[in-house]
Image 1 (cartoon, one colour):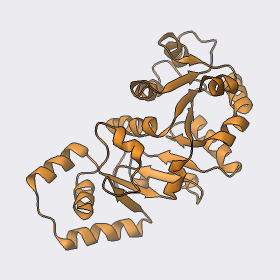
Image 2 (image 1 turned 90 degrees about the vertical axis):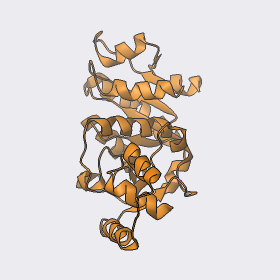
Image 3 (image 1 turned 180 degrees about the vertical axis):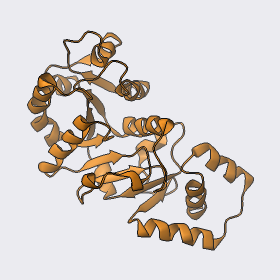
Image 4 (image 1 turned 180 degrees about the horizontal axis):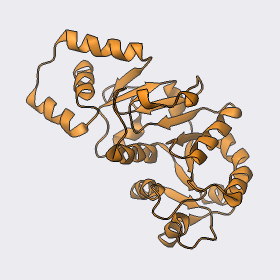
Amino acid sequence: MNDILLYFSYINKGNNYEIFKDLIKKKKVTESQIIQIKKILESANLKYITVFDKEYPEAFKKLKYAPYVIYYRGDLNILNNPLVCMTGDVENMATEKYLDNSFDSMSKQFNLVTSDFTKFDRKIAKMFNLVNKGVIHILASGHKYLAKELENDLDLFISQYPPDVNPKYIRFKERNALISVLADNLVIYGSKNASGIINLANYFVELGKEVFCYPSVDLEDGNNYLLKNGANLITHVADLMNYN
C-alpha cells in the first residue's frame, strides 16, 4: 500500500483529493513506475513516509486532510521534542528587542517550527542553529525549491509535495496547517496589516492552541488585529511560560 500511495502522491503533486480519487478508482500501478519514482527521490537525497508508517507524525493525523505521503530530509526524531513556531514579518528595533530578550529561554525549552517565509523567520532559524538546536522547516513546495543556504545536517525539512512541485497559494495554506498541528504555540513578534501570518494564526486557533502577540505602536497592524480578536498579549517570555 505504501508504494501505491507514493505513486499517486507523486503523479498528483501531493494533492490529497486527486490521490483519494485514484485510490477509489483502483488505478493500476506497475512496479517499474514505482521504482522510477524511488530512484528520483534517492537522487534528490529524499526519504518518504506514508500515513501507514509508524514514523508518520501523530500530529498530522489531527488534520481533516492529513497528507498521505510526507517527503523529508533530516532526522524525524526532532518531532518528539517540544515545538514552537516563532515568526514575524516586521523587522524593527522593537521586534529585534523582543526576539533578543526571549530567545535564550525559548531556545532552551523548544525546537523551532518555521515556514522560512520571511527574512525574520530565517533569522530566527539561524539563531537556533547557532545554539545547536535543530529546526523543522515546513515547505510550501517540493524540496527542489528549497534555498541552498538553508540546508544543513541539523535540521528537518518536510514537504507533502514531491521534489519538483512549485509553490502556489493553496500550498502556502496547506503548509500553515502542518505548522499549526506540529507546534505547541505560536509567538508573533510583529506582523503587517493583512499579513499571511494571520492565516497561520487562524489555524492555531481552530485547533484550540494559543497565539501570543507582542504589542505594536501601529494600531492597524496584524498583531493588534489578532489581539483585538482574542490573541494573548505577551510582553515578556515569562508571560508565555506562566500561561502554559
